[in-house]
Amino acid sequence: MRLGPFLAKRYIAGIEINDALRRALELNRHGIGAAIDNLGEDVTERAEAEAALNEYSALLGEIAKARADASISLKLTHLGLDVSRELALENAGQILTRAARLGNSVRFDMEGSRHTQRIIDAFLELRATHENAGIAIQSYLRRSAEDVRLLIKRGASVRLVKGAYKEGADIAFPEKKAVDANFDALMKELLLNGNQPAIATHDERLIDEAKRFAREKGVSKDRFSFEMLLGIKRPLQTRLVEEGYRVRVYVPYGGNWLPYTMRRLRERKENIWFVVKNFFD
Ligand SMILES: Cc1cc2nc3c(=O)[nH]c(=O)nc-3n(C[C@H](O)[C@H](O)[C@H](O)COP(=O)(O)OP(=O)(O)OC[C@H]3O[C@@H](n4cnc5c(N)ncnc54)[C@H](O)[C@@H]3O)c2cc1C
Image (cartoon, rainbow, N blue to C red; front, side):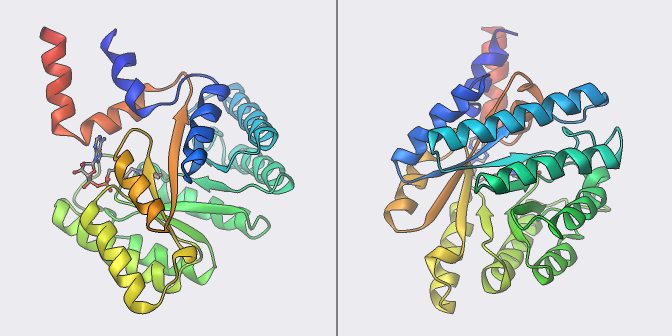
């Protein structure tokens, strides 16, 4: 397991709130916002969900104290969605209320497909009374065009991502080409009609296309943002800021780093080779 923490280090700010805050402030100094995520998902015990609620409350307080440009991101299964829908709604509602009091906003990550409908339903219910809530949508899911249309109609802020979980071909596009094409289409719909959409990718072809399309359609640079993950394509983040675009970086922290790190490693064949090579060296 020596290798695990070593690999996680690239993608994760550290274990404590202060580690995340330090990274957020460092990004802020370069004109980049942060979206801080306390790592955790699929909890099955009420006590774990309550611990997550307390952590997020403390995090929001520390962000305000440090005057950091940092929103928060969370997973509803970390707040107890698998224990009960009511528990997750109650916890997320408390976090949204505290965030609003502190002038902050909260984005719900999108998780594996068995949660998609429940996350969207919970999000829409909460957003009816909490305008500071946003959500992520995955372009690899066949259903996402419809979801984006509905979320645009409701005025919700959408973060568009490709999707990071293993899904079957019945519900997700199996080919990268189709995932990218759907991202391109949904990105354009969001740029034209969305409420402060976040184009969350490191794919430079899609980023260039977003810039070209926004220019062509007269969508100003303050009406959308680019988002990336900590540890990936830092020079590109800086270049976009220099060009006048809004950039936000997802900053995960916490002890439960393994599932997130595995998703990041899976995305890169070179990373897998690196693991194998180091394991046997
Ligand atoms: C801000 C943000 C929030 C996200 N939230 C969610 C979410 O809520 N739910 C969800 O399912 N997914 C989420 N993701 C992950 C996303 O779904 C993709 O898995 C991830 O972004 C990789 O896809 P890509 O768009 O960068 O495109 P890819 O085509 O996968 O990558 C484009 C290029 O980026 C670089 N790159 C990509 N990944 C890595 C990596 N791990 N290490 C090093 N270089 C890399 C490579 O140069 C690669 O060629 C989020 C991503 C971002 C940026």
